[in-house]
Amino acid sequence: MRKGWIAGLVIFGIVALIFAYVFLISDFPKKKIFGCVPAGEVYENPSLGPDGNFGECCSGLVGISDSMNYDENCEYSGFLGGGKFCSDCGNGVCESWESKCNCEADCL
Image 1 (cartoon, helix red, strand yellow):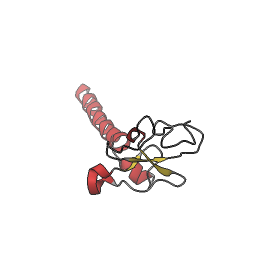
Image 2: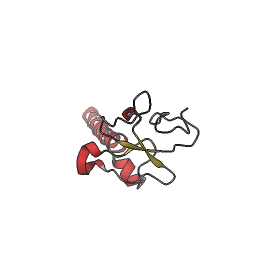
Image 3: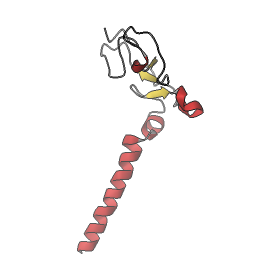
Image 4: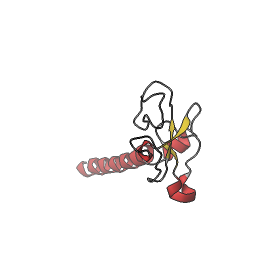
């Protein structure tokens, strides 16, 4: 009886790890569930070459450059790969992927 309970617990743990990877860590949810890239996620990363295009931003979102690609004067440096994020820039909230340099409407 005890061995069956332990085996069931081990199997449950393995299934939970697989679920966590597929739905929380990998790109699966962004591409398969939404059919588009949601706000705050990378939709294009030229430094990855042909594999750096992850799809289109979801409806109502715009593409903005990574906020880390700007210096303190908001001059675009692009030295970190030039990744682009989907953003809901203009919603009145300065999100973590936005800055005064890539979304002035939200981040003053």
